[in-house]
Length: 479
Image (tube, rainbow, N blue to C red):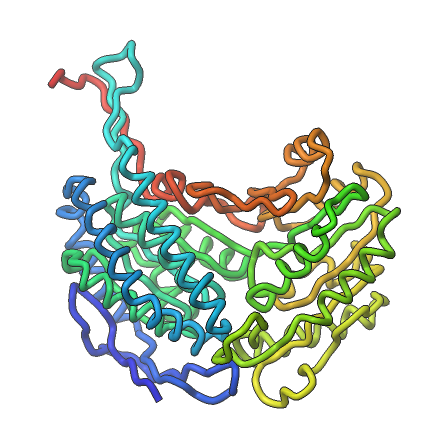
């Protein structure tokens, strides 16, 4: 049993002031694997005070020096990658090979992209060539509360910490209590890199406790939150009394439009994307919308592919998917699969219960539904598990209408070899991101959504800008 009962505040590991014990569960076995402390109001106040005290000096630190520290952090992060992979695999159930490549790799990717973007970012610039006395200064927002989820831990921690540090903000990180060990390891890396005391602080806690305290805290200038739309609404309400900036990266219900002229790998690519990370991704292509002439063939192919997706423990090497994170998520997914059956969707493969041979652990059968209609629950709600819903459409106009008929707007997908159609759909689909024909977003491309999927953009220059205020100065003296 791992014991981690300290918080990182003001450059040192400290005992909680009013913390309480919390058991972290290994989702592969359902057994407790670690004990941490969840902080209380006094712990939150101490971390915020440290960040507030450190802010003036950190904001005044030259950007080149801040970038250099993030470069040092990246170097340390890469050198301790195996430790990080093991921690995430252990606590949130990512298979170890996937944890090494994708979960750890996401952090490397984002830190490097922030470094590249920052080196050409002008924190102080003239308004234009015709107004020599007008200056635009990009200035750090201030003390930032960073609240991160369990499903892609280092992806989200590095997207927030890397950008905030380069922008000149000080921060308090509250990682998910479901997967806190990776964040505590990351705090060790921040310390080793040499960030000044108070610039980065970590307090473990749950949403009701530390999360709510940070959201309402009068000395917190910004909350950057990734998680459910339900929690995002609560954070927005809690932050309203102090009018702090709130940056939200929330849920999704991505539509994946597959046209009759899609390439031969489109279906396999789409199903495997859905199953990645056991379906626990906000940008998962969970609504597969198929043009009528190829519908029956695609349903059959999708079912065959999903039925071959193997499920196993996070500790085992290989290309399988692991468990979902906890009992609550497992039961929610089971209920939604049953809801799909009850509402008349056709179960192609999978279903309720654990996969054969797995009697313990939060394992879910890779599941595909066909003949799903837009009013069904499984077409409307974010399931956050390895469950794919397939729908039929007749015209491009119908596909756009149904794709956009959702409260979410994070990522949509298009599979077609018609370039004009792809470009047309990219403009019509209401989402922060549109990915087509399996082409991933390039380095520095922003991640974020519309509607109830959130309001911020993370990654690259956009991610840095989210942690900056824009100050307009007139009467600037020539230097």
